[in-house]
Image 1 (cartoon, rainbow, N blue to C red):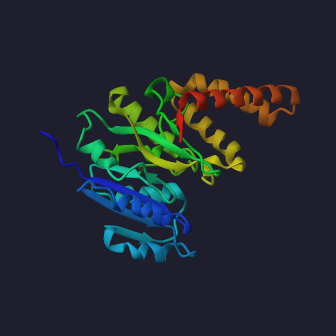
Image 2 (cartoon, rainbow, N blue to C red):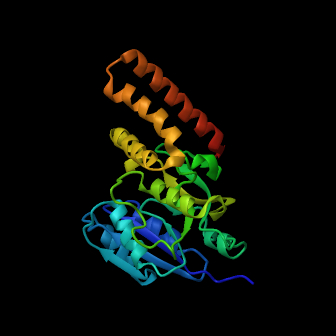
Image 3 (cartoon, rainbow, N blue to C red):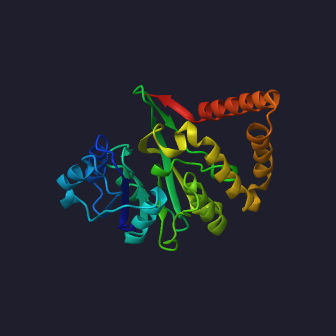
Amino acid sequence: MSRNYKVSIITICWNCVKEIEETLLSVIKQDYPNIEYIVIDGASTDGTLEIIQKYRENIDIFISEKDAGIYNAMNKGVMLATGEWCLFMNGGDMFASDNIISQMFVFRQPMSTTKVYYGNTWERYKNGEQVLLKAMPIYPTIKRCQPYIHQSAFFNIIYKKYPFYDERYHIVSDYNTSLWYYKKYGKSAFEYVNIPVSSYKNFDGASSRQENQRKKICEFLKIWKHNPICWSRYTREAIKYFIIYIQPFSFFKNITNSYTKNRVMENKRKRTLQKH
């Protein structure tokens, strides 16, 4: 017998007046009947609040106040959520279609052991082009990174309410949370559905900015170091970090940069299903 799961959709935003409306409408237009919509705004001053107010009657919970960063705001959303499942659709992100939640929870449903229920993602670029990225296999991918884009993953939050994200990490805390689910529940807790769930832009976000790359690597290193299943990855990447950022040997630096760039391009090629 199918269940009528309550799904909490959480939108985090701050000064995104040009993008927030398409995100709000993407959620509001979903045809799934049992949605709780939560919007957490970081005290926007650019007109974002006025747009949110246009759709206030379609939003169950709305808060606008200063926060301590994106993961702090996302934790607020999880604490307020009353659904069994939640998904983050932040400012500038959108669902891939108006019936995605129904596709995931009506036409099919998660298995009883599933704690993370995820699909593929449209990735948008500044030039208007987009590609469909296929989620990676949970193992061994989880040992080095998150196998999916977080906008395309529904999390069962009944047994993990707070802190959903570790706020010591400012860029890759979503990976740390996915790793928590894997360590606690194992591979069987992750269920993949081969459909595009969301559309997100791969620019302007904290993790995509070039100036944050060193900080991003440092956060990955801390997570890998504290999780034994990631130790081999930690060893390799710690050596690369030492060569690139600590030792001023341009020869080794150039070799490592070239290797890293080639690996990134190869992984991107494997994950690209099609161009649109």
